[in-house]
Length: 203
Image 1 (cartoon, rainbow, N blue to C red):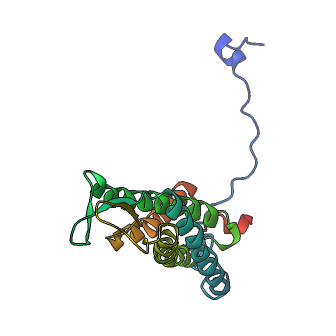
Image 2: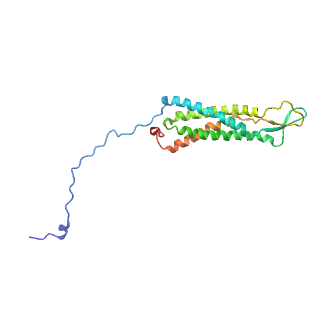
Image 3: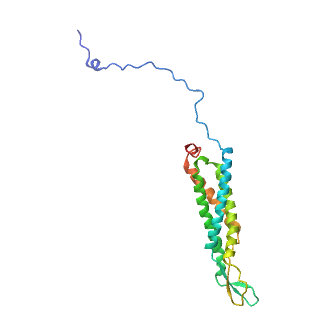
C-alpha cells in the first residue's frame, strides 16, 4: 500500500457545522416607546408645589428683616432726616442680602422639587418657578412690613437726634433671583440625569 504524503496525513477533518439558515431583515424594528409629558396627573401636585413654595416667602422675608441693617439718619434744623456718612450704602446692603436669600431659597427649592421623583417633568418645574416668583414677591412685602415694625419711626425727635430708619428694598429685581435659581438648579439636575423620563418609572 502506497504511503500518503506527510502533508496529507497531518490534515484534520473539518468540524461539522449545522445547517445555515437565511437571515431575513425585520421590516419593523422594535423601539421602546418614547416617554410623553404628563400633564393631567401632575396638575394637582403642581398646585401643591406652588402653594408650598410660596409659603417659604414668609420665612425669607422674616429672615431678611432680621439681617438687613437699618440706615441711621440725623434730624436737621428744619425737621427732616438726613443720612449720616456712609449710611446710604445700607440701601445696597439690604438689596444684596435679599438677593442672596432668594438665591439660597431657589437652590433649596430646585433640589427639593427634584426629589419628587414620581412627578419629575416640565409641569412640576414650571410650578416650582411660579411658586418661587410668588414667594419672592411675598418675601418682599412681609419683609418690609416686619422691618418697619422692628425699626419704628420715633414719635418725637429733636434737632441733631440720630434715629434708625427701617431697611428698604428700592429695586424689585431681587425677586427674580429666586425663580431663576430654581429653574437653573432643576435644569442642571435634569441634564445630568440622562434618562428620557428623568427616572419617573423608578419612583
